[in-house]
Length: 300
Image (cartoon, rainbow, N blue to C red; front, side):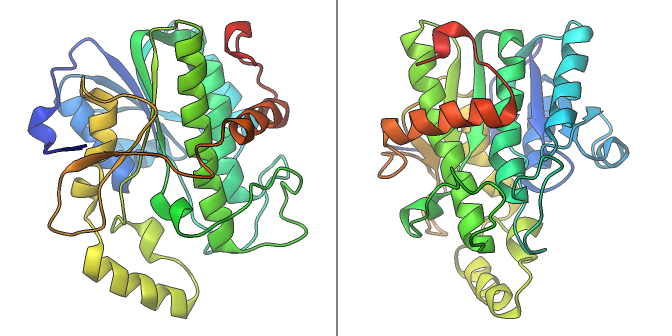
């Protein structure tokens, strides 16, 4: 299924509150600005609130480092303390591996910690604040179809082996598995909250241009020229997932790698992202890693 969709199709969001992580640049900034332009109160969850205030003065910026589970806990506690309610959580923040193997404060490989585990913890800690009819949007990557990887279930620190590209794809595959599993569990529990997974295609952002190794950087430059999308176009599937009444879970929302095709596609999820046993295993492990227990009605 493919839908022609633009920013003009975003409905009126007056009275709704959105939390967007990684909202100081790239996709996150576009998403946050568009949500705010259509009436939403946007809380930008960012590492540098001063930068968020400079680049998007209308946003409410609060500090959170998704790589640090203590920071995630403090961010969520602040929203609870202030009595905030949330209609939309966009788990957008992400990093690549161009700086080499690094570990989070909890000793977890940095890409997996930031791109997946921090958002798993954040979602679990904010779920009780999400109003009926709310949504959680996770950002994946279509690379999982082309580059088979294994999840680091028994090697969180990437001590046995490390590849920046494999670690990145694994973190995005984990997002896809988590988003689909959360959707299944929410529906099974009869909760009126949606979990959706979207991807931007190849976005011409800093994440895809500053890739470190000269050969890979040259390859990405060619791919960006051929099929890359500026952040404004690449953010469209994320905003569709976040706001359109036709968006639903169980599919992968995003573009096709054709520059002329600006439609939003609702694609079938393929292996290994459609493996419920793997998703269940990841869920159970992630609860232990993150120290976050999801509500009883969402447990296996």
